Amino acid sequence: AQSVAQPEDQVNVAEGNPLTVKCTYSVSGNPYLFWYVQYPNRGLQFLLKYITGDNLVKGSYGFEAEFNKSQTSFHLKKPSALVSDSALYFCAVRDINNDMRFGAGTRLTVKP
Amino acid sequence: DAGITQSPRHKVTETGTPVTLRCHQTENHRYMYWYRQDPGHGLRLIHYSYGVKDTDKGEVSDGYSVSRSKTEDFLLTLESATSSQTSVYFCAVLGPSYEQYFGPGTRLTVT
Image (cartoon, rainbow over all chains, first blue to last red; front, side, top):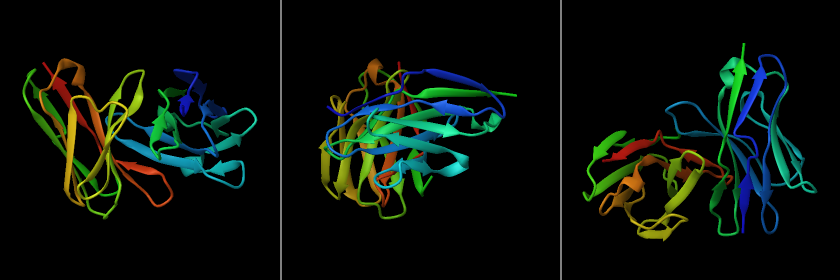
């Protein structure tokens, strides 16, 4: 069965430091992988996706993610965190039925 | 929010009453989705639609029904609301490269 795991409920980083939010997946066939961000009292916003091509994908707000097939991972990264990056982040995979499977979410807190 | 609105934005209702949530989109997307968001579970798919009058069940469809009589509207109905259906409900549409775009959500409380 297709699934997504976000092993960390919470990630804390200091402003200006690099951040990583982890995601691993299990899927049959080639994965379609996504990251979304949710700010308080808002819907999810699409950040970036991997479907094919370069393993390093760049998205909105300076975020990027690295697809690693051997480790079945798709970690979200940013070189220098901002306080405004504080939000809930979701990894998702498009499964064999074309449905989107979401991870449980990781709350990122960036401290000044 | 990709032209997606949801109504109502907040609702409190009593156990056993029917409730209908509305999702409206203005950009002619073919696929539409209803999710619920609960702490520790991320988003879980309730139902989705792949065209007018074409719908299918998702992961957590029990107790919910949907209808899509027009491209722009996708309705979610709780036939007889239960406390376990207290949640935040999100509507989404499918973009051109498989990404989804979400509405602002409806917070439903069943007392």
